Image (cartoon, rainbow, N blue to C red; front, side):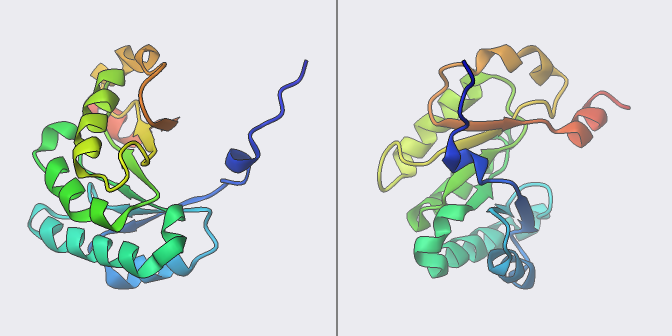
Length: 167
């Protein structure tokens, strides 16, 4: 018996990243034909620029109105000390989803779920895309995501993994 792909997911072919601290790039990304726009608060934003980037991303989400469902936000990793501030700033504007970098196991998704429940307007409504192979330790946790709350997608992070193992 063949499986019919979920049509909602079959249409998501392109993900376009834009740094959260560049109004011009945010505007261009949102205006693009990309199926998903990822506004980045992690790697593309210098530590001193993160507060302003959070504000810019929240403003862009608010201005997008109903179109914000295709706009997701890559927050900082759970252990960075920034993710709670990221969520406090962006969740009132209701992003379409959250991309979690450097996730090491399903436990990270459970911990993000707890934070999201605290910050969401509509508890349980925000899906999560986990970047699951960006650290050497994460390679051993890839089998632990089954049943993780909110998990809508998983993907690889080859460049960060290479850096993590010194390649």
